[in-house]
Image 1: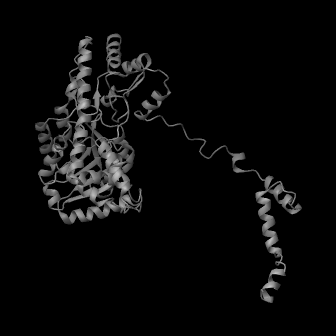
Image 2: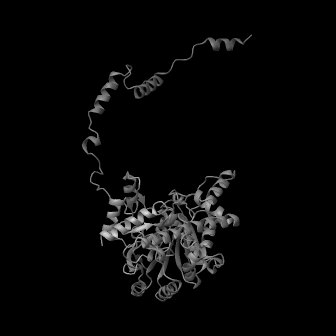
Image 3: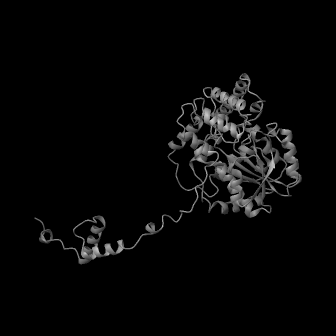
Length: 464
């Protein structure tokens, strides 16, 4: 038998809500059920009063109404136009990303393997990385570009911080120089990747140009390059494409690189290398890094921006690194401390997944070897497309000398087509490229190459 107290408790009615609780419930009901008949006259009056006040939107369409429509990015805009074209024979040669023979994006097998290993590791976490990024990734990235036996690495003179691909590495480096380097002028080649001047200008540097490409020979204007760098003020910063120059595909020879190195060191010009294609140009990681290592071997200082977008196909992961080779180990420590102050208010800390994939591949000898095989296969396919396009134009008797197609290297070819010819090919053949005639060789395959050759032949023949 239950105790009397329990019985009384069960029989007693629950206490009724307090007046304040009623008011809260009533208010909640009015918010949730605006048409409820429980609304009081006071609530109706309040609603009517609020509705009588004009809103900001009713007075001004938008505080941003005066903003002008920005133009499309000249490179990314090509893809926008391509996507709008319903033609079944359209070809996109503007995008700077590798495509298979079937015209599809490629995820390397070694990358998929590394990702699976990371997924299966129960000790993995999703915590923030330090400001400087994944330490193992930074260490391995420096070894990849400078060489494992680099004196600068052995002497602890290299500072490496993880950044948001090549673009982020350039921006962090530019802002660091704007704050801590005595010369604020950076010389960039003509032409160069369209984002270079914007990146450095917004970072606080003044961008000037030096001659690089010779339209007459469709090769390097070496004499112009030497003349312009010789007249640059002492200590100026000079942007150098480590290999596979974008957009021309024209690189200096080893002898020319040595002359450039001697000239720059004699004038205390500070090298800032942009390496977006290591291993992707020639198929050899070491060969493509040779110009950089020549500058490091002389003991001088430099900056290096690396990207793993092309050579590992990690475009969307935004994986890159900025390395600064310093004069001494103690300077390197101070430089790193200042790089942290640049990065912290910019994006605080970098992503975790992409650099973990890279570190997994670079630390394992078998996976590293598999990567080099896949990397060389991509480079070889592009080299093959160059030869086949040259042969196709030659067989058609296309006017002009097209040997520059096989002399240039890397993802892009500067065809020498003018803007009028480019527009003609888009209109008549649905072939898309940037207006300066740059084409991505990675977008070519056995199916669309004859179509491109026909278009070039028609454009050159009809529009001289």
